[in-house]
Image (cartoon, rainbow, N blue to C red; front, side, top):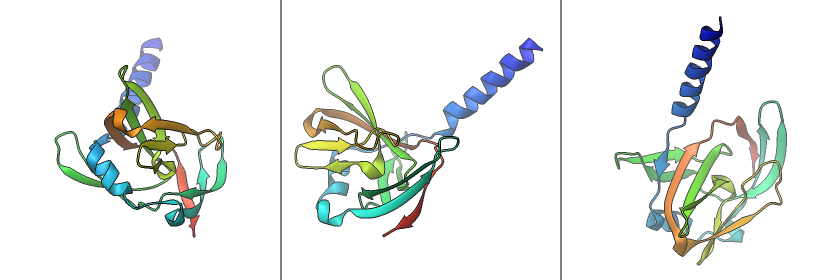
Amino acid sequence: MRHNQTLSVLIIGFLFLTSCKTYYISLDSFKQQFDGIDSTQLKMVEMNGGGILMVSEQYLANPITKIKCTDKKGNPAELNNSPAIEIRFTYGENNRRTVFYFDRVFVSDTVVIGMPSRFVPKMRKTIPLNEITKIEVQNGGKNFQYVNER
């Protein structure tokens, strides 16, 4: 009986880890996709979801609907932006990593500003653009969905 439980946990863990396909965005492409977006282009959205801890929230999101990226082989790909899309930045001399929700990422000339949590919406973090060495994006598998976009 214990062997079957261990096997089940391993199978579920494997499926969980392999179900989130990671895509990549070059820093130049990232800057181009956010070029010209300022506070006047942000859109008000309403999002809900999250499973057991149901979240319902209205907030200003960036207006990007299609995220241009590449797969691990360098082939072009596009992801539909949604509240479940996460973006991970590797940056700095110690290769620090920070994850934001893509629709809550904003870019200035020198920094990326993002919200790392749906549960603490006032939390913000800033990353210097010139320190970013890798950008990864994926559907985090969370059950967040837009219910109303204005």
